[in-house]
Length: 279
Image 1 (tube, rainbow, N blue to C red):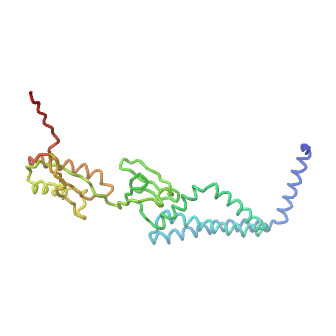
Image 2: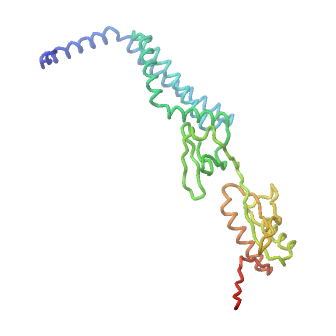
Image 3: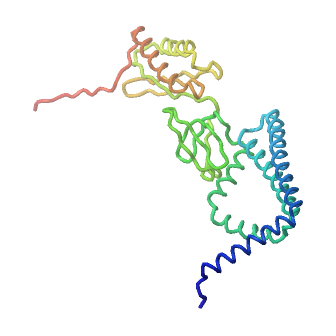
């Protein structure tokens, strides 16, 4: 059984370590100064190289997440190289240190499997580019406009300004519906069977031509699609930019209703006639 260390012994041991540290600093003062200079030079070189690489990638229109990742990796490589040289300057054996980091790296990788999975998926998204910032996508049961593509997650922006953050590993390998930068409105209006269909279709096309949010290319589709029980359905399928989708939908519906009312075109609604027969 080990006897507890007395206060006097603890003080003696601390003084001995202090003397060893002082002797080491005095004996390796030149190496320590050189190591400090190397580390400072490494920091400056990492900053300069990072800025140069960032400007080079910006001229080639590389995606921002990829630029950030590469700049950070290059800076870390420069700093790591400077640190290795500095440690070797003061006489530290790097072989043992590298072996220790290797063992620790295995444990860290096992503990961070989910994080590393998101990182791997994020790199896959950045390199393969299945979608870009600003495009409207639908995946994993959610949809929205892509706001940011990060290394670990992707953020979608809904029309109501709410945000959905999706881990990148939930995106890779899933079925992705990419609408791009435009979306097609899926509208319809019903008219009575006695309506002049050519007139009704012409009014709808006029509304679409006058609305500034409706894209003229591709050409909007307007036509009869259904002969219902009480009305004839006219499909209205124009395209609009993702940012104008909700506004275009409400504006087209309102303008069509007003134009039909002004032209005395009836928009019927389902009715039921009940007859009571006396026996």
